[in-house]
Length: 115
Image (cartoon, rainbow, N blue to C red; front, side):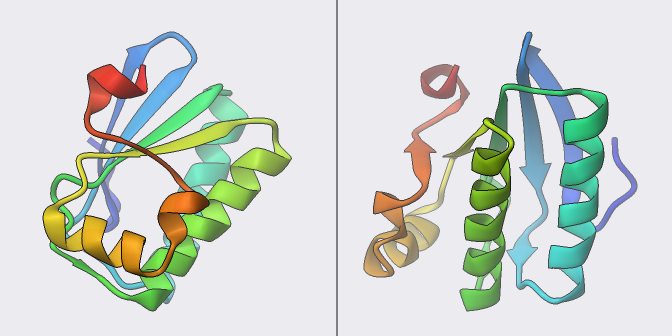
């Protein structure tokens, strides 16, 4: 388990894939900086082709948290990697659709459909 407020656990479900289980709130700010540092470390050390963000535990997200997801997606695309969001709650799904980020971000129902 990673000792980090925003990332609860890092798994490797399949070669080339890293799954990050995120904390209950994505509110940006210092969490976004921490997350970006952790993501950069993962890209440098594990060199995954696909980063899967598991949002099953996320209960709270705001515009800064959404911005964090978009920035992560852009960062990964620049590095020729892919970001996939899985296990979005109905509340988070609604917010993503309402902001039209479902057109920008890759979203899958669960880990099986992301692999």
